[in-house]
Image 1 (cartoon, rainbow, N blue to C red):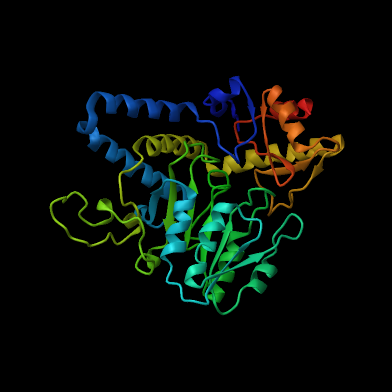
Image 2 (cartoon, rainbow, N blue to C red):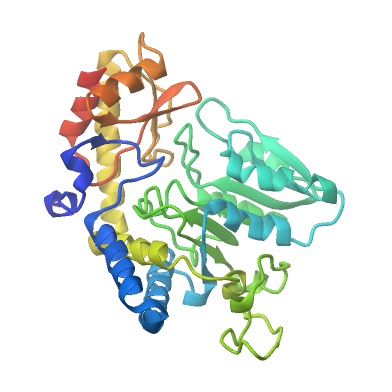
Length: 373
């Protein structure tokens, strides 16, 4: 596939070799234009143009449902961040004292603190340590008992880059009667995800990483059979079936995930997020996946002869867009300093350098990374 047209949509390439999409991605040109369009419309029309932008929200919901193959568009709801989507389940689940939730010990804090915050309700958090650069499903199984109610995992671990086998984890949860929640922020947009095939009960992902959107606009998904079983949080005027009947109080909640959209939408953020989704879907998630794997394979192949150590698992079923590396002599902060001076954006996590290219990046940009260090 010729990626030059896709690459031309990213103004960042004029300034940076940007290899840090596991942090906050630069916006592509269509998303910038969408933000401008919304701002200009709001300045010129105020609320008089609301219907136009409400229709845009509905369109972006459809795009989001297509991205994950949700059974219904209304199974998708918009979140201001991944943490909100996690809290929908953590705070709303019908816990009983003595229940527990199982998660990886190296999870990002956003997928640990909301569960730890349940201690006052008698909920135990059980952690599964990594074995080197991977988390083994047998260790997850061993951590579960008859009081395990939820298992939560990042689709890709933010530090190591380990990619979970969501299908196998989902089957394990089904066998044990455990709710399966996925923090999808480090894979959604690059790795195809089909919630009708993979037994995930709920997921959440802000749009500002691999989905190439702005911060503050992302998606959550909740399987329909769980809607009535979770206590809704953040309930507001838009949570009910007649949200525009402001003078009629009828507390009948929407029968789908829309009940968790209680207040005003982040119109500019969702508008720009939709433009990023359109761009990604136009080239195809599978094509994006192949290109990201090509680039990270190239990165690893170049790194080893130069003396770098590759920490991330590069097994075919476990590799991702995140590569965790150790320089033969330089500490991570020195590597980052040299890269920044050379116009190369990378990051560090857990005492290692983290490199995370997207599909619009090139082998030449990866070479620039090595030249800088």
